[in-house]
Length: 94
Image (cartoon, rainbow, N blue to C red):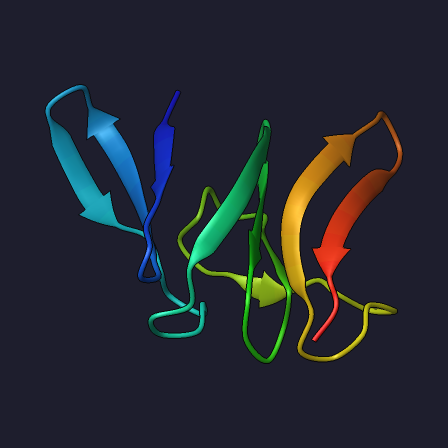
């Protein structure tokens, strides 16, 4: 099991042991603040600002993909509500 930390300015760190943290930001916009995170087992979501508001990783955060289809471009995802088969995102509009 991993622990995650979102950084401001940007990036994600992942712990591999309680005292060792590694960069896990591949695919995320540089310097975009991480506002919120959700750990869904093998899937992790992050909310940020920039060209895309949400990203997901299905590879234990080794690579991130945009996951903001339908959200206004340039919005910021600042909160998540996660259910069994859906995600509710709170966003700030540009």
